[in-house]
Image (tube, rainbow, N blue to C red):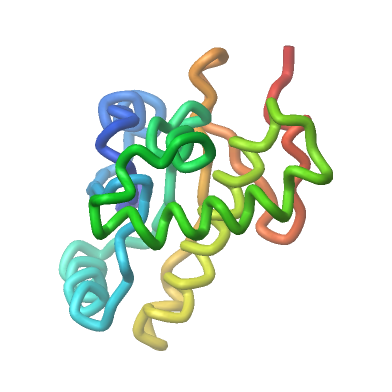
Length: 165
């Protein structure tokens, strides 16, 4: 049995779904839109938790209809919340990069995947060296319509692969 640490957004409300689909020993850290800053202080706590609980896998998960990503792509109604300013800046950046290439309907999935890939890279750089070889790090997008958790390659992402009719 794996010991698994999930980074989730509380607005997605998917912790129970994760426990049903992945019956490992699961731990959760929540932050709005997975915007948690992996600062030195936070990472000391995360590294200590990984060591204490023997966690061997970390997964960042956001839903395909995450309210904060959706808002960040549209009106940015919550930009007065300090922790969301960086997230909204990143969303705007990825939206600008992707909107020229993909149809509007695919932009939220593509932006979400880019944000998650960013978190994977940040986590890999922030784990203690001796832990980084012991812990597998990935990300998934929860597709509500099909009730599936979809992974994607960190180097290439095609949103058409997520929606299997």
